[in-house]
Amino acid sequence: MSEHEPTRRERSRRRTVAEIKAAAMDQVREAGAESLSLNAIGRTMAMSAAALYRYFDGRDELLAELAADVHRELACALEVAVRGGSAAARVRSVANAYRDWALANPHAYRLAHGPHGSGRHHAADRIVPAAQRSMNVLLAVVVEVGEPTGAPVPAELERQIRRWKSDLPVAVLHFGLVWWGRLHGLISLELGTHLAATGVDPALLYQGEIDALLAGLRHPTPSA
Image (cartoon, rainbow, N blue to C red):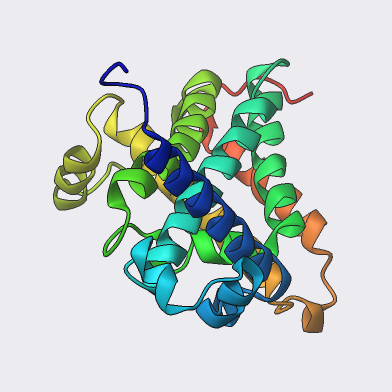
């Protein structure tokens, strides 16, 4: 047996981990992360809740692992959306794919963008790269459209951004962070039904925000 080939025990463990995560994700998608119950997973798996600790340190670690999977799933959706069309059309496609995915998977979206999805306490080696994939898609389409306009980035903020990433101009990285924050903010308001009292159509508001973001780039390609 080669050193890279998993043993029977390792294969069995991987299958069990996958089954636990699938059962857990079913709970999250149905009722949110707060509903996750190790006892319920144990019943689904015909295992005791205590036996689950052989595979995960606890509920928080399991939720973090699920959040990593969600980040990766969202990144895949954005990577598909970025294909084809003009640069501005790709911006719209990516932004709309981001909202569409969130509306189709509200509890998963909240998990990925909540405390368990930050990578600060668990699964950082999986969460951070997966989340960065989505950001890389956003940044790539910004670069294609044009150079951000607006005031220079303050010196201290520029230093912090440079510590985060150094492969693109600071103005682009700053614009990408602001763009992400604005889109995420509207999506979060929509998911929480906070816009209902205003009578404003969230879809129209979101499209207007995409227009505003495109207008913040110098010499944008006409949208398709």
